[in-house]
Length: 110
Length: 126
Image 1 (cartoon, each protein chain N blue to C red):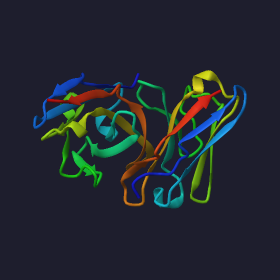
Image 2: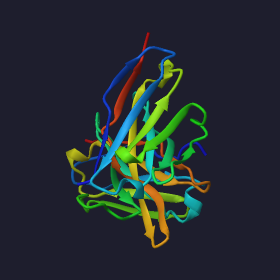
Image 3: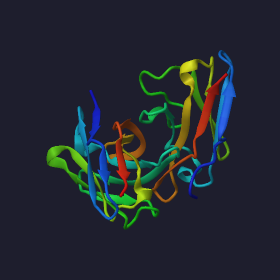
């Protein structure tokens, strides 16, 4: 599998909640143990947002949360803010111990 | 404070070679793998490969196997990405990142990229 599947774009108004999905058949043996989400603002390096599906590193807002169902993981951004406008990537270790990223989702705050 | 700092931007001609450095500080360098990621202009993230600084064992993406070389000098807490026979298509930002994961008494399972370098812009042009 060359990349995990994500929607190309998602948009929402300030204060709303949006959800980004990520689907892949080779994710980590299926248990999502090594699944993560990244945020990338224009011109900046990616930043770890969530790891092990729904764990937040220190300093990441609790407006970001994760879940999984079957072979799909989801990132939810609650209380959408202008600063959340960025590209979001999912990433995972795969069943053959390589790593893979999603194609990326551009989040627009209307 | 954990920091991952990469070498500066490069402009190269087609056919040249290039070696990018990635220095880790604020943690025990040999306890965490380092990975490399490519991002072409306007495109997404592509995983290139990883290295274990403790024993220099590498794993490459099939897409980059044979095209790049990842190495490490643990005495300098630095990992390297070497690109050879550069082409215009190699124009990209190259990121290195530390891999954290699950730590056990017997070692650790690297899982996710937690600290990223600032990126190295590489331009290949005649």
